[in-house]
Length: 418
Length: 183
Image 1 (tube, one colour):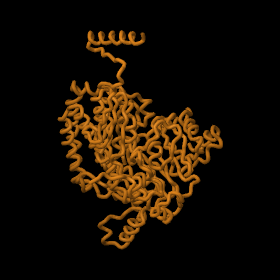
Image 2 (cartoon, chains in turn brown, purple):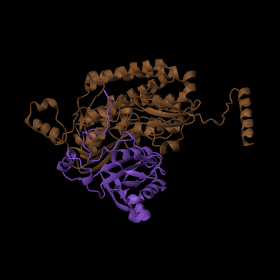
Image 3 (cartoon, chains in turn brown, red):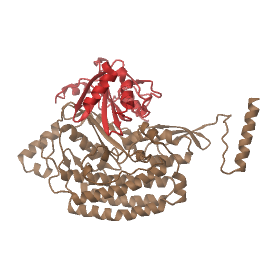
Image 4 (tube, chains in turn green, yellow):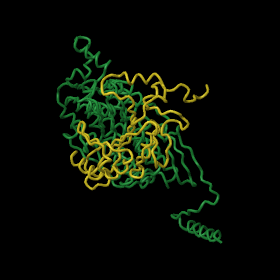
């Protein structure tokens, strides 16, 4: 009896669906034929080695379980065995799309516990580096997201701009990719006039190329159909699930650590915190798009206001001396030897220092026992915390939207897996 | 700010708050392990404090922690791996980083967890974000969170026997603990 009434309902639904093209029939599954699809760890749309187990009902995602750890290198364990200085190159390999931002975040955490403050010029250089890294990261996010939903051109345009940024990083730091640029108490090299000119040229040209990408995507029917209203999340759930950065601002929360607890010289620079209210993939895309222009604004102000002066704090017991002077002066040689071998010996205690990384709240928590090594270092990686919301975001969406949603939350597995 | 928080916490939770102190402008609360859910619920739901965002949970192994620049204690355990010989009382710490998005403040709550029975109440009912953070802590330190919906490892293989961030776990790993693929 029960069965026949269920059949009648099903038939009525099917008839409605056949008559009206906007109605779809959702039937109970008498055969329990859910399909479990394994996506990744080697999948072009998972941005690295993210593995998803997706339970599908037809094309609709019923459940999704992310599996992490394919890129786990144990950086927190390595940190406990290396000096504070030795760990700087490892921070490049966390969020490898914006290494300078990680260098800055790590240096700030160590400086906080060691009681060192970088001189103003170094702080400005760090701001410039971190903001250019943010542009680079957002370009990658948007390019890859657009490619995942089928717009190949934007990916190439974004990478053309990123190539220019890599040339700037090459001039600024000496390397293109793994920069290791900051030192405890300053930066490795000074910002030269040549670099300054290159950055000036980039920020003059960038808004034009930015407008091209906007023109290409924002009224593109195919792109909009794939992202508007897809993967929506409301503000309260987003906060509960630990969303941060551009993803949280896409839900209408004005939370940006650059204004939340200003570090470096961000309190002297004027910029807007970008928010969008919808919380869907398009909102997250738009936040990134608009934030790039804010970053350019910050870089322009920083270039104008950057003072002359030293690039490292004058604290010989904590800050590594300039390499050229080590070969000439006895004191510098001694200090270099002591710091490299014994390390920066910060106060005993613990600090948690966060910065607004390219992906969100990038925090370093350090417990120090007063020796040259951190007793415990925890990396609060934004990609890891943002990925936690993925099962919530993809639930009830189509399987093809999963790639758009992953692209829109912009995870970097080097950081998520640590 | 710290006086206000201390006063409020002590009034509401009394004995469960062990200490409230400040280090480098950061407020650190040490609480009793069994009361961690109540402490965090108070911090989250109090109208004035409103710590509504859980930034992070992490564990720490305080085995042979020495307040000096002497590295001997740490190096001594690094080379000999005898998991049965380590002291247990209050060996682990679980550290919660809470943020108030409205007040723009942060607070850190710490609890001590014993080494022989490392369990801690789960915060997943209060902050859904605690889910993965606690899984990570379980993976790295072997601290089990009671009331957690899905207590699996986060990074290491499910059948792995050790917890890598414990201080008695050697830096170079335990030989043969992860089966390598055949050549």
